[in-house]
Length: 493
Ligand code: NDP
Image (cartoon, rainbow, N blue to C red; front, top):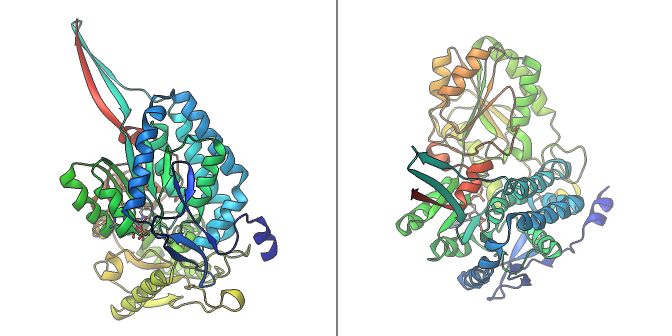
């Protein structure tokens, strides 16, 4: 099995990842590289450029000189190139999925069936959307007309995180490119491999030089150079709330256009009138998919008291049965935690939960592995009960395979608990009562609500959070509007 997987790979072990600037694959100017670790084995398996502001400057210059040609190219022609990129992602699905699994720690089947196909859809979606993108006109009686122009901005910066590396990278760059901008992008230095493979795809698809530039390296060096660059006036960022605040601090006085998709601490509300079996199954999926390292994962599960014990028994039984292990094995449901640093952080939150009086129902510790994964970063899926909703465990983002269970008695009480954190990204509600579903959805403070499902995504819908989960929306027209400059023209006749 493992041999077959590796045979699918087109990248060599210990390969040096390179920046993608002006259509070329380049070492960073410093010629310094960072170790890139496979979280399932704990071993360094490739090297990532440790770029700095000089590489960002080079990338900016390439993007700036490509801008005129790309922005003036008819949308249908841009669309054709992007569709070719989408096609190549589809053809290289297995290679990309393997790279993502090795780099990030997620199960290979999940990367193959979920993440990489979604990266393909992101590009395909915006490649076709741009052909239908239109703007408004407003007639003023019969004496004047306003029309709105939406034009490409110029060179934009896109910064993405490590949890869904290619998926979130393409979610940003696809609308930016489709709208006619040139991009300087920075993937997470923790998971750079698929962005590197993507740069090869762009070359093969004939994307004109300089239209997309990918600079690998550390956030405080490359990311902040992008944010502070005086000619890059638009930044789209997905990552942690603390980093988002730092970006806003630098960008706000420069009056940059900002889209910030930040952290979450999402409530999962289970009413007694839910479809019980489906709810338990979907709640397990919402809690532990991708090791709980999805900003949309539910991490606070509130269950109506009359079914609390029944739910707890069924939920814990299913969680305990999840197989944690080698991401390259087909039966693995929960893979490795992305890095040693994050592994330590998640474990420290489990310790905190115990100190705060939490009772571990299942999991609660690192999972020790044999064989090639003996030094990997694995944590047992963990369910905790007995904590109040205002304790740190229930207020701070853990971003790992850890959830808490709490009973509630009334709709008002659960809404108060659900809305009690500084975050407001997503919420899941399980009930068969339609009126209650609508009422609770309208009162929950979050940018996204799923009723009787989780992570059911239509790329046309607005995506983003409220409070400290972010500013702005991505997806559909929202993304194309963000990546264009708006001008109103009023003509009197
Ligand atoms: P970080 O905020 O640490 O990093 C995100 C990106 O920003 C990385 O590329 C990082 O580089 C870069 N970065 C770090 N510091 C700076 C800086 N000072 N200036 C500019 N860029 C910087 O987030 P994580 O990668 O740890 O991702 C996890 C977080 O992302 C979680 O909080 C999660 O909730 C959130 N997230 C939100 C989503 C949403 O849609 N709302 C979706 C997915 C994740 P480097 O990796 O080199 O540090």
